[in-house]
Image (cartoon, rainbow, N blue to C red; front, side, top):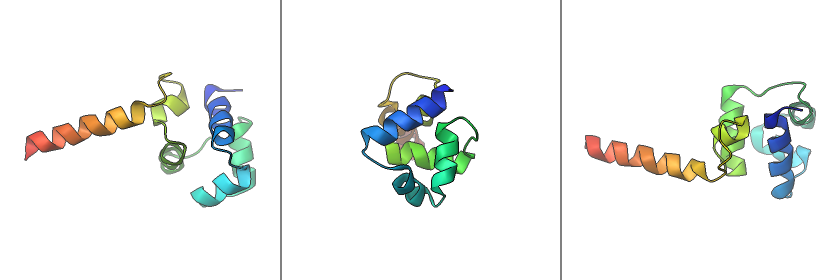
Length: 87
């Protein structure tokens, strides 16, 4: 199993979602979510971003780049500060 598939399955269960419920949120099928969790298929970029949003983690965490779950909010804060400097 890949880090992505392990983390996806863990996070889905942590949020108490079934594969079917998560699939509906992402406008995909339960079979597709099952394939992601069993390392048979990988999501496209759009689905990866949606997964991170719904599971409240960063894409980096989902992909195994970092082990910090809450980094998503840190990154959004960082980009928000950069935009404010431009104004």
